[in-house]
Image 1 (cartoon, one colour):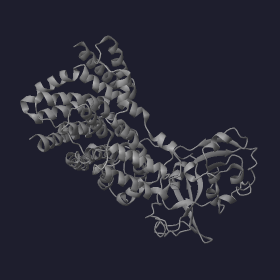
Image 2 (image 1 turned 180 degrees about the horizontal axis):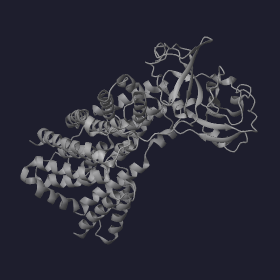
Image 3 (image 1 turned 90 degrees about the horizontal axis):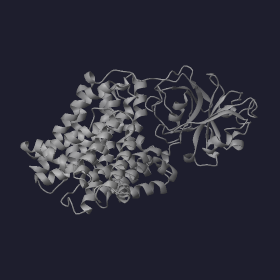
Length: 604
């Protein structure tokens, strides 16, 4: 009996540590499983996890599937496939509610088939750009962005890591001869997830005007920021060839502006939004370094200097680097072309900054460099290490997240993802096999490199998941799950099976607000399994598994309850109370819908 109480005490200690902010979820979960393994030295064999059992948790099918899906999402990001999907859907909204609707529906749809965390990461700069161009307060859009991604993730099995994680626990139980009547397919959760998502989006559209704050996020003073002169070319036959500047999205650029267009030796200055772009147009921009990175990733725009295409390394292997010309540099006093920059450094200058001065030279290669000029260079990452201590430059610094997007492979990436979804949805193969095949094809087709695939895997999250599985297993082996289930049954049995579902949902929701979705699912899963057996409500665990999936994900009342809530916390300039005010009613609304529908479909 002491083993059960020790396990419960360890979980309470973990919760207190997280609430007080002493450590992150991964550290707390790993620390918790370490305590339980240590307690195993003083308990009967089989009560607490061994090293071998812990390692089996890290190799759980759900954990492996999540790791592989992160690679798939990275391949879609690096090819710009996300933009191919979102650009025609988002358009150019006018007004807060219209912007929220045009944001939330596509985000929810994408999150149903992609892990919602990278979806939010890719939409954060989109929302930032909207806010700068339209004057809409970021605090009106970032919480809807996060909530829509969370709710969209409940629409399919692969929409969120929590769903895959719970499915992995079901599969593991079936391998041990339990829960054999349970069948969870790609769209089983959709029966509840789609109504939940539609209701949640409707609620946000209805209450956002009064409950969401009208607050600006912290902004950077750009008065003294480096503004580069950048030259880009409209690619022949591209998506923006023949479009106006307005429809191409090149008007009111955040942190940048279009100075002029060079067309067939004719200079077009003070161009209006209705000006039609043609293939071969040279566009002269002035902007901050972040804006330069965004322009480099715009479909249909390519660097105007042909030196970029003569470098020895393929573009996907390069990044942007800032370098300041020193007083002793052989480049000083020469034009970029005369200095034979590409030949000497195997790099290409794509933009120049000189004390805020607008460079009036017709082409980047004609700019005569001076000591103190800051160059924005496209080069292999080894450029930074090779020339960091070179007397040619005072400072060399790589620009974060500046790898060129492989637009030519966006269609390939979308096709691979579509095949993966079809295979998993039709149960032609297991999800883990479909995801492994998709990740392998993305690497083979050079949508992402092996090193980028390795970098996409969040090892801290995977370690936390493996540890959470061990903690959940310990709840069963020590009898703690049965103790908690007994208490849950005493409270919920008088109101029937739907009351049991409500108790499980509420328990998962509370744990989620304290220790996050994965830890919540791992702890509540064995409790729900024990409660189902004790209550004698059948042998199909599907309603309980679906309830845990939604409850462990769809928690909105705190910024720490889900990773995407934390991601938009600073960007939207939010306070803790903002999440409570908007998210708590949504929590209970979705709980009612989930419990009623799960009871109706499986338990009535």
